[in-house]
Image (cartoon, rainbow, N blue to C red; front, side, top):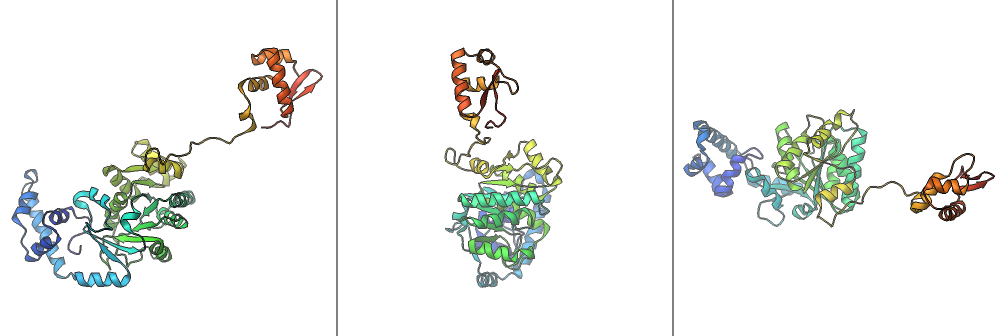
Length: 377
C-alpha cells in the first residue's frame, strides 16, 4: 500500500498473480519477475510497455525501502482504525468488480461492519458547491434511505456528501464515508464533528495508509470505491465538469444502477444530472422510494405510485359526474335538459340530481337546477 499509488492496476495485477508477500519480496530484491514481464508484455504495446514496467518497479522499490508496515499498523490501531484485507470476514466482495484496480486493503475506523453495511447500500454524490435545493434533496434522501434500512455511502466532502451523511445519521442504518486520505486525517477540516458522528454510527474508510494527505488524483481514484461499494449511485447535483460524474462513470462501467435528480434547467449545478438523464446513462428519480425501487429487489422494494390528492368528486360514479358537468353555474336548467346534455335518461338524471343536492353540489332554483357556489371541490 505504501509502495504503489492507490488504485494502481499494475500493482494489482502483480499482487493477484504472486500474492502480497511474494510481490513485496520481489520489489525489495529489485528484480522484476520475468514471468510477470512476459504476462504484461502485450505485443501491441511494444518495448515501451516493458520500459514502463521497469520504471514503475524501481519507483515501488524506492518507496518500499522507507515504508514501515508495523508502524502503520500501530498508528492505525492507536487511532482506532483496523486493516481489512481481501478474504477477511469484513471484506466487501463487491469490490472484486474493480478487477486489478481493487484496493489492496482498506483501513476502517468506526463501529459498523463494512461488509454487512454495504449489502444494502446506495452511493449519494454531488457538487461541493451545492445549492440550497441540492443540500435539501441530499439530506431528504439520506434520511429516507437510512430509515428504510439502506446504508448511505459518500465521500465526506462539503455540499451534497455532507448533507447526505447528516441525513443518514438521523435514521438507524449506518453511513460510510470513503476518504481520499488516511482515516486519521480530517479533510475537510470543517467536518471534524461529522466524521466523529460517522465513526460512532458507521465507518470512515480509506485505502490510504495513516498520515497520507489528499490530492486531486486521489479524490478521483477514491470515487471508484464509492461506486463499487454500492448497489447503485445517485447524483443529486453536478456541473458538467464534476467529480460526481466521475463516480457516475465508475458506476456505469461496473454495471451498477445509476440515478440522477433533476433540477431547475437554469441551474448550472444540475446540468450534469440533466446530461446523464438525457444520455440515458442515469434513471431520473424524484423520491427516495423511486431510488429504492431501482436498486432494491424486484417485487420487494416497489415505490408507491405518485398520484394527486383525493377530492370528493373522486367518489362520484360516472353517471353522476356526467350529470354534475351538465348543470350550469348560472341561471338554471331543467332535469330534461340536463339529462340530454349528460347523455342519460330522465330517471337517472333525477336520481343523480337528488344525490348531488344532498352532497351540496347543486341547488334548486326557479329555473331548475344550478351549481352551488360553495360546492365541494
